[in-house]
Length: 92
Image (cartoon, rainbow, N blue to C red; front, side, top):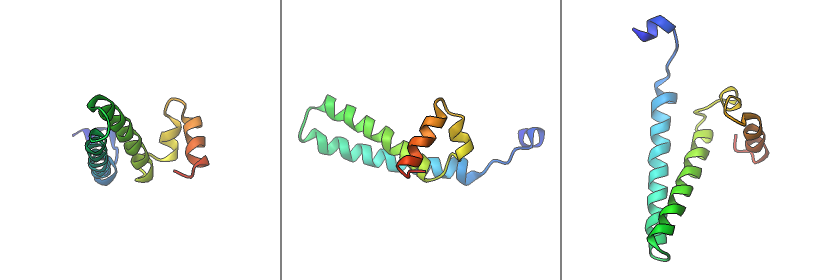
């Protein structure tokens, strides 16, 4: 019903599949990092590092999997700076 009302094309791959893939990869990397770091440093610090690593991994995966296009990135807060940063390091 909503589709008929607003006539928007919802891509299953872009809106569901790619974010799920990014989340699974992020979770695996963060969990592995946490388990490896727990052997070397305290649990609290390991958890914080794993969370930060997970955030960074998810962000890069969202860009690499092209979940957001250039126009959508520009709509983010500080989108122009973010786009410039991504272009500088050839992430997007």
